[in-house]
Image (cartoon, rainbow, N blue to C red; front, side, top):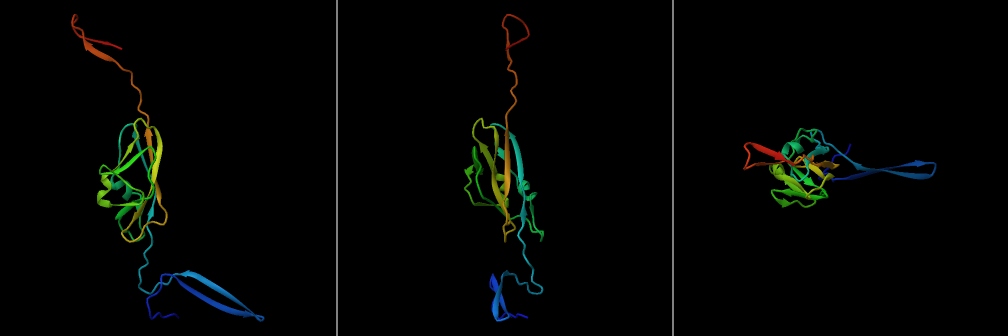
Length: 173
C-alpha cells in the first residue's frame, strides 16, 4: 500500500525486478494513474463534427447551439469555450467582424458572433477544426466544421416596363 506524504506527481513510474536463474529482469509501468478514495476523476469532454450549408455569396452564421449540440461531458459539465484549431480556405472566419486567428479561444457567450464569409462567387466545400472545453479540460480530439457553399439557381430574367402608348404591363426578355 502506497501512502503518499507529498503531493502525487502528475506521472508516477513504478518498477519492480524479479530474479530468474541468475538474471535480473526489470519491468516498468508508466503513466500510472492513482485515484484516491473519494477523489473525483475529471475526464476530457468529447466534440463531434458540425455541418453548415449556405447559398453562394452569403455569410454562414453560427450560434452557440451549433457547438453545444456537438459537445458532451461524462460529468455533464456544460461547454464553456471553444478553440478554433485551424482556419477555413476560400473565405474568412470572423468574430463580430474581426478575423479569427488559428488557436483562438472563444467564450460560449461570443459563439453567436461567429460567421464565415466566403470569397465572392465561391462554390464548394471548406471547413475548419474546433475543440471544446468544459472550463477545465479540452477534448482529446478536435472535430471538424464542414461548410458547404451551394451555387444559386439561375432564374430566367424578365424585364418589365410600362408601355407609354399601350395600357397595361408588357413583359419581354
